[in-house]
Image (cartoon, rainbow, N blue to C red; front, top):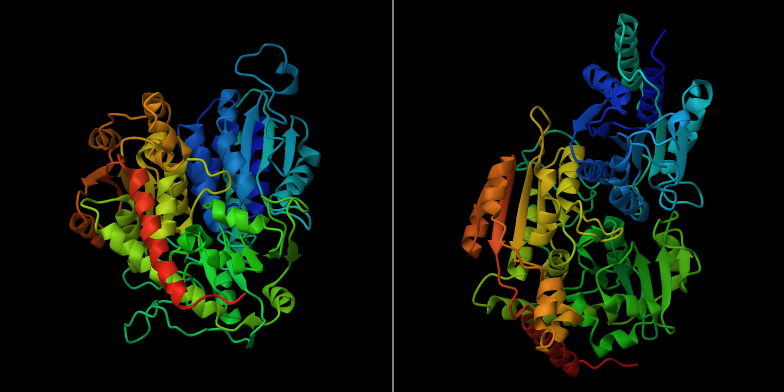
Length: 619
């Protein structure tokens, strides 16, 4: 007789593999041991790639990174008890970002639940608010098990009314929890070989769009990490350098649109938020509309992208906007949120499928299923509208760069600009950390060569960024460059622990170290800190200074370390291929950060206003 817990384990992994899973991440534990033995057999046969992490939160975000960058379901396996709770942050992010993460949790059998048994809690339903489906598979459920698992995994890919997202498979496993007889060993070997043969004949397609609201590949999957001769790939119509080697990212002064314009046409803009995808950039160019593209939109390229759009949004020019074509989910600017809330602005939201982060009716907008439908509802565009936005953005962007370069030392904006350019040059996938780094990218990243970007903007937490980047590298087989702050790095430093014999992705972590939480100085708390009654409070509770030695931390985890104090040193480090794992620490000073950014805004907006004064907008 085959050990029942092994039958449950192989039934679950067979369902996952047939649903398209190629990778799974295992956190060690005793109750989950049957699934670990099955996973090891599947890895040996070539049916699955299996990664081991000792920390469940790091394991979950590693799985999230793989799933987010491939569009395939990825399971993270844990034992019972508090191990399950450690998956919650990644499950929340997966829910809001539409990522088919699978929480595969081992549990006690029903007879031990509620009895005070060791390492036992109430696991069924623990993720109920965030998962698309949940199954509590108990012993002796083998006959209906496959059908139950298939239904749950189908929900991970979404339906007509629900977006893709995580699912929870809770496995009640009864002792014994290991292969105890020769019959068990033969069963695991044969099962794994048959599964591998089946998958070699047919492996399911991905069930979610990994990069965009439309199913469009951004990066080439594969183990090759030499990017010197590889196309950067943002679709066949991605914009970059022509065959003569000239850069075509500079403003043209001409509307690239293929549609007619009229004196009383729409004063519309395209807002590309997280996950909008390259199709948004092509639509903006074809329609002749100014494009405001966040870094993680994966649409920040092409002739329509407006330089320094964040500063342009603070000008009176934005009052003339009457229509926003919204693609993806914008998360970085209060000015964008205010524009979308305006009663006099029509919002055409391009959503070919349901999204995880929006409930119909919560905001006044017209949902369209395609760009063709958006064009039909939009109608003609106003004469000179695109050219005005383009030139205004150029004026603001040039002033911002001049002001930035006048700083006596490196700033976050210098580093952001260098990181973006390095990824455009070598094709590394950019993982953008929350807080200041992604906002610095938004201010200075030039819309030239396309860059593939992943950012955890579902819930926008700083947790799990290091692990997510490792997952992106494992999932795509591409080198990864991470741009993150010191607190984001330290919060997930445990993800640097990769055991002996594990696959190690090529990851370069650029840590902007301002010794604390610099973003709070730019928010209202920075103004509060100027009141001496609150200066120390803001510094302690929001600034959170520390004395961690990054070289020592990297040495402990066996990760290469470098430090860059100048732009020349940083450029030299970026010139080398991204191979292995390396942390590049860039120390900066957050003192005066609020005033520095205020000066940037004033310089950029003054330059833009001076331009607009010469070409006033007719209402």
